[in-house]
Length: 487
Ligand code: AMP
Ligand code: MG
Image 1: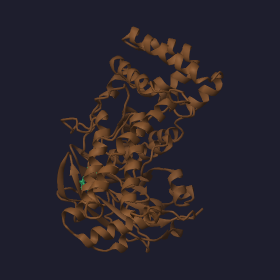
Image 2 (image 1 turned 45 degrees about the horizontal axis):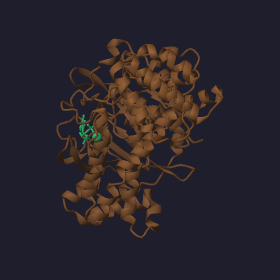
Image 3 (image 1 turned 30 degrees about the vertical axis):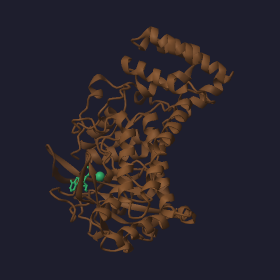
Image 4 (image 1 turned 90 degrees about the horizontal axis):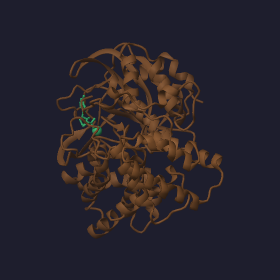
């Protein structure tokens, strides 16, 4: 276990030079104070969790102090935003402080979000508000606990610095961790500006740092693209299976590592709704829940375009063709598990689709349905759940199909079925209204709610004594919170 001043840096991205990022110092926020820290994320840096309570912690992650070995840089990238190419993006309010090596030999990017203006801030103030910082913190750690690949969050530091959004708010910083902050938009930037040497250098960096196994392949760049396609197919299958809506799947928010990245107006579904749009600014529903799969493919094709100087077009096209079948296979596998089924049958896709139709028409809580389905033997569980559905004959037909399917699957022991199902069906989900409660309290200086919520969500599958309030359906007001891009 290390203290903060014992971290070791190896800043590989910074060494790529000024064509890739610009040196910028963090701009401190006033009266920095710890809002919440994640001991699990601290462990990734071998940090002693007690370090979170030291004055140094809030000073480092509030932008007041910096390690001598850190090299704070604002990265340049571009990307497709809502389908249109924007040539001028980059870290407008975040800095890559450096890469920390842990005892396991891993590198972790330390990215300080809300660290002030950079050459890429455009009209922005370079700040992040407390509300959005708490949302990113909670989402990162909650997704990780669900087994969904994501960037991580070490802490949120609050402050008294005023910032203006629709109203006056307070600035905060969130320290994000990820093995890499390279986005699809990094490749797009060097492709569209025709900087061939830098484009190749970026690809070489990504291969060496993140996909060393691809270098052994006859076509390393193609192997790398294939890996990116595979990881994103698996990631989006997990989002769909667990009802996670990202909200802003622009190519500058897509990670080459296939991890959930750049949290904005995200949401977990409460009632199942395939057409759910979590981003209040997304008028046309480009990033609606059910569009995440085709948009994932669209984004990968934007990346493929940006890789054409390195990889033959036909090979890119063929590899892109793997996305949908891979997605479908992962999704079916996850949904079978959520239904407690261990073997595959051809009719499973239909069984799942039918259930989702019934959930949609009945306004069924997406997470709790699966949890309750495992609580009791299949026949009893469906009999109890039936009352929630509007289309009862439809549900009866589905239930008959499902219980027959469970019988064929051949698990005679309910205790084992329950254990298996509860291990994949969370009891606690980061619902928007729960995040809102935590934010409201934190804005009034009470950080106990966000800390407790974080703790509950770090073990989402285990029933925790005294925490039943976190496992309820949302109140009516809590289903219609409007979250927009502005944060
Ligand atoms: P996002 O919607 O957070 O993915 O941000 C899209 C782009 O806008 C990125 O280049 C950000 O760095 C930039 N940006 C977002 N908010 C701000 C802000 N408050 N100040 C400066 N730049 C920002
Ligand atoms: Mg972004």
